[in-house]
Length: 371
Image (cartoon, rainbow, N blue to C red; front, side, top):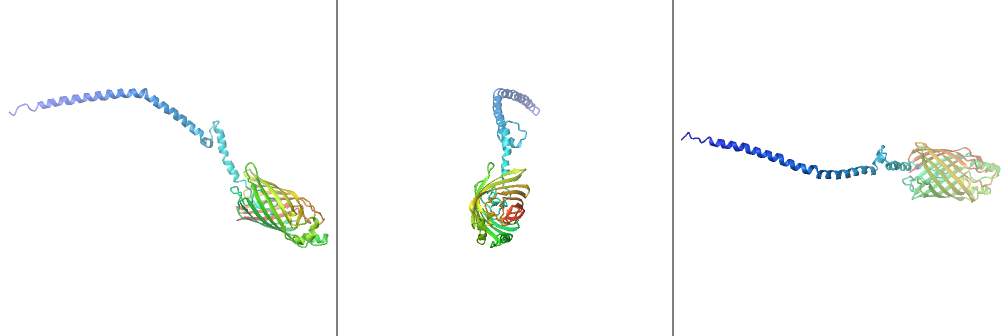
């Protein structure tokens, strides 16, 4: 009973089916079926249609987008396209006017009548104003000492610009000692005073602001009163100085350019007045037309030189040794800009004759402060 063959049969049956059947089934399904399905759709129809359409559109848009923008006009010096050239020129010229406008306003001082200008003449730029705000400015004070024809003179002024109106006041004091002695000798009388004091109240208004194509234009009215005229009346009336007060009407134009990257300013104007020598000797009954011209240039940082001309009508009687022929005034100035609020000016003038003496060599020193 123990020797029967029960262990041999199960061994033979297990080995035959497990080895052959799984190997054959796996190889046939994995190799043939995926290869045939993948080749037919990918090569012919779908791939060319999908690839060509978007590539052509995207390339056209990518090429046109940078050409229409200003990137090449500003940053690319190698851009040679004809339509881009004018854009490049325009883009490069756009900041130039901004740089110009920051430099067009010349250095400003107060003239002897408390208005914006130079020593003798006016400027169309309202005193204390800037390019950014041409209608308003700080309070400006000025003090000036000068000698003319052996006579000493001083001017104190204060000016404020508000809402396009320049409001100014100036006091002109002149020592007449030398003239008093000449009148005593020639006319056998006395002036009655050794000094002359003239008050000037000035109002100017900016009619037109300066642009790249036209100048700034300003109109003004000045009322003057000579506080010593009553004592001078007896002598001066016979020479045409008949009144103690008078008025000036002015119209001034100014334009500034950049020359060698520095401001060159030119101002010109007309003045209708009845004052004699700024009102120092009094005022005539009739009004006379005069003209003014001023030129200034900044030669270096902080230093501006200028030339001024003021035409004066000769309408008064003459008396040798007392009142000589009235002549037009010329002046050369140099202004040092210490900072944004302080200027110092020195000037040389040729005033021809002033009263009884030669005024071919006049000197002036001025201080200018903005608060």
